[in-house]
Length: 228
Length: 258
Image (tube, rainbow over all chains, first blue to last red; front, side, top):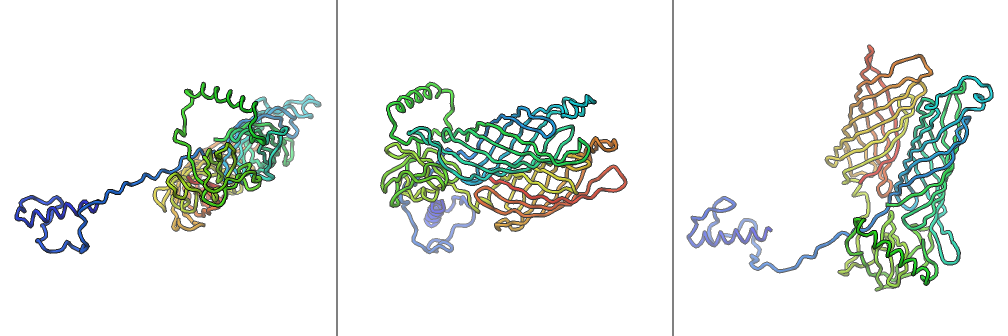
């Protein structure tokens, strides 16, 4: 571009030098008197532009699959409130081959406590308050990567992981700060589809039965995820 | 899944059926990567193919110099490739960079480094910590307007013994030295806090108040897109009572930039 401007400038110079300087300059300013070098440029003037074909450098577009999304279902035991089916959804981002982060939401229903059932007393919670809904954000670490062999001809990539994180649980008309800890097993059916088996403990403090105590709520679930 | 033996007759049959099914479905799907598959040539002595995307997975095939491979996909810093004779495997990014493209130039991939940490525009993350004695869980998203100044929107849930609440805020964040690996920042913001006293206590009404906050912290680049972040904020809550309420907040967590 600069070369082209320089050529234009020189043409202007030549025209000016030949006595036809009535033509106004495109860039403004007075034409330099003939014979004087152009300001700050004493290199030989390049008249012919070399015809070098510039190659387009394309950034490689590769299908990157670092995200994993899926659903799961299983059984969750809520301390004092029975075991019931649970289900949820999760989204994970794989930082590198070892680390991943996961966000999950899940829910389950709870039953009457043994106390409520045996004493025949008034119920502690309404049906709506018995709903147990949680969300969490966790950090996972892949351990023991390996392969599972099915028969003589097939090998599947698999990995165990430990995972833990923080979140909140809505139960018994209150939101409770919840820590989750657990481990899981990821079995890749193909490089983009995985099956999961997970065991997770959701811990929080609750005072619904008198004194405040920390409760462990264990959840085991099977899941299905897709990488994208 | 990986086939250990050479693809047999049955596998071939399955593959044909799959291809037929895929072709039937093809008009439904929009090809996200319609470009020609990327083919590279091995320039180092050999290229090692792992059975999975990780160092722990064994090497089960080696591609020799001058042979070519097609890149199928990428997961974190591993590339899935197919060799000329149909073998598939995973190659480490560092090894992939020892291959040549169609013009005979070394292949370079868009890898995430500290440069991206400094120049990236967007950041999302999750933090947790203490908010005036209560637990807090926070999610935020930020947009960097220049290397130094960014705007952030944050949403938090406060989980305390006596009350719960939600906080929504908008913040200006200034990084004095964005080029540092551990980069300190200062922040100034405002928002609203909704406080919901627990039902087991004396009946008190829920209330929503405005607040202003000032604070500081640091972001530290860990690996690829992952950063560690820690911050302190001091809140002044403009309550409807006679005195303003002052609360201190400490949080740590992880974020991603892109």
